[in-house]
Amino acid sequence: MSRSKLVNLISSGDVRVNWSEVTKNGTLLKTGDIISIKGKGRVQVGEIKTTRKGKFAVDLIRDCYNG
Image 1 (tube, one colour):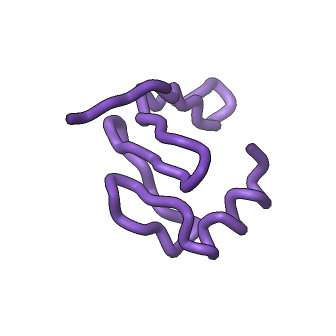
Image 2 (image 1 turned 90 degrees about the horizontal axis):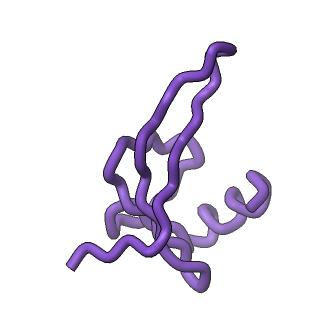
């Protein structure tokens, strides 16, 4: 999903992190957080690694069911 589409979803209130509505684009995530997008589903943030170029590689776990 593109960043511009995510910005629109966040501003319309369709994105939640750990069941709390996200209102800012710069929300920091950590390992274990659950991201939920209305109409799209949920993913869990897995391992967050730093690449040799200083960027971030994030493992996303689909089919996460906490409960």
